[in-house]
Figure 1 (tube, rainbow, N blue to C red):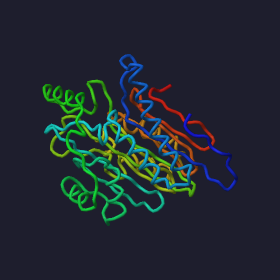
Figure 2: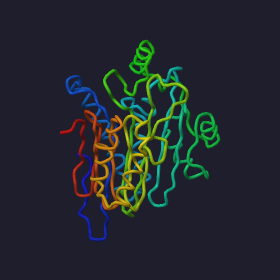
Figure 3: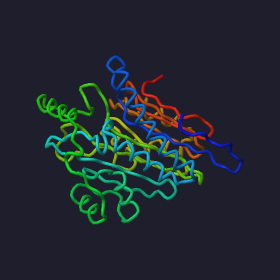
Length: 319
């Protein structure tokens, strides 16, 4: 159990925090007890950190950033330190964050050496008039802003490197950490005591990717979105399909213009819109009243959640 909530007064708003560590999990048959325990512990640690912010009266923005940072620091997840290798044996990371209060957003794409890309995305949002910075330009901005860079060995993982070598031998780009599907992204959505929503997403992308490929994570409206009028969303899966369907904003539109509930809108996108094109993955979402939704059409999705008056929950597979 993570944290105990005190009884709410009528004036208090419902709090909610949902996180994910990627969709398309390792199959049950091949998931060892030890590895599953490690993933659950990592998710619980991230949830705990974000909930500490929320339950202490902090901003939803601060909570989602804090939760994502924990996962970026954990080599189990394909983001930050655990990012997969590109074809050129580098790491090109994407991240985005958005405030539902005023629709401010910040994102970075194809950055290398940044310990916590989500922090840089927030700096783009708060310190510039831009939304998205990429590659060497984003790295130059990070240096000028005094961000911490890490050497290549910080990001090196023997398993990730072996996966790159295998992908090269088979001349393929992989959406997953292993030949078993695991879409590598982390994310968080939150509702705070002020009634504001926020979303954050971070990823290391695809193993063996080339040509500066950027997925949906850094694209506002595709993999990340937040609007206090409706909901906050963070997506995970085959990014090209989330881009083509503008998946995150599609949920907002269904709620705003067609009167769908959060659950109805999220399930429409994940179980109808994406599969019609062949898209696989999932998402996490929270609406302005604290309802949450965590649909996925893959074998599983690493996820955890907590709301006011409820206990923390961690799950990997459908049940």
